[in-house]
Image (cartoon, rainbow, N blue to C red; front, side, top):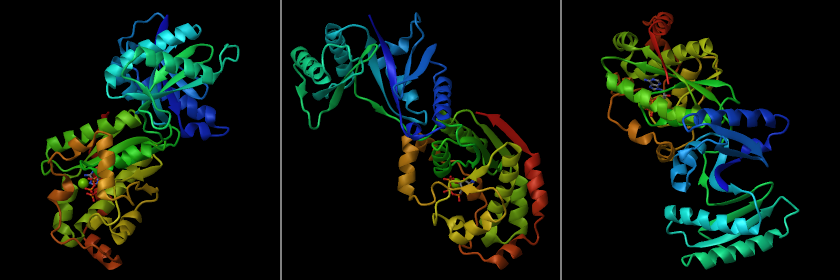
Length: 399
Ligand code: ATP
Ligand code: MG
């Protein structure tokens, strides 16, 4: 009798010292939450790995074979802290049972990876009462697989896949693995307020901070009807994509229309982007403090646009006290797009709905503002009132 189980490997978590227990239990809880729609599961840890299997006596369609397990494996590897995961067969017995399960496992495996032909066997023997050594097990199982599958060939240097045998209190066989997103379990590094626009950069910035263990909330500045409801829906969709990795989050939608109109009328045109960002950050900071967030997060990348020069960043930084994390600051656009594709956000991000910065954009923004520019641009604005108005018109959506 054998069962299918998922074996998930932890990465950086295992380097933690005294706190390691906290990180591990967070990781298990996050897995439990992420997998809540996959039936009743038993999630436990042993030998610095996490094992996931259906609760005994429960039929679970996802665990039938490697093909049906793909969906659950893909969810497992999206949980930060997991380096890779494999579907394994778990059973009791001796070398005969290992042989038989190895063949059955390979039949399923080759349906999914028909172009995998070369392999080597690696064995681990944790149960020292087992009558064969690890190399003997590897030889035996390698030979048996060759006898049973004409398409397979051994290659110890650069095999298409490694076939693993582990003998512990139970025996396990598995091959191949799906790579995870690494990082640290969300919930181990406090909470940050992400300034989420409809673009490519900010969802990636949120993903990157979550990968360091940070929980997220998000704020979006919406200027209806200059930005349409479809633009807002797009931000909601992006928040959902980020939350696959970061877990449940609140999205605060600030009604920004009146503030932008005021600014458009009463501020220096070439300074609009910087003044607008200074107000955004002040609203975001207040919101962050109200919601227990210890930092702000943006998708800025140095030099990318007028509001992202060193001077513009200095002048937006100075209006808030909370640290602002800009994980993309040193990445070029292509590197950001690559991450955006990897997390499944790119197709949504490039949908052509205007964001507020493109509607009220200056034709010739000042790229290297100085103190006098800032003072002049803001002299006719009642910034404190703008911030207060912004905070008064918020819709909060639970993602
Ligand atoms: P993105 O691709 O994230 O939209 P961007 O390249 O368009 O960024 P900017 O428009 O200068 O660059 O915005 C820089 C950052 O400011 C964004 O990454 C985001 O964090 C924040 N931001 C800009 N507009 C908004 C908005 N309407 N609501 C919330 N945050 C915003
Ligand atoms: Mg943008």
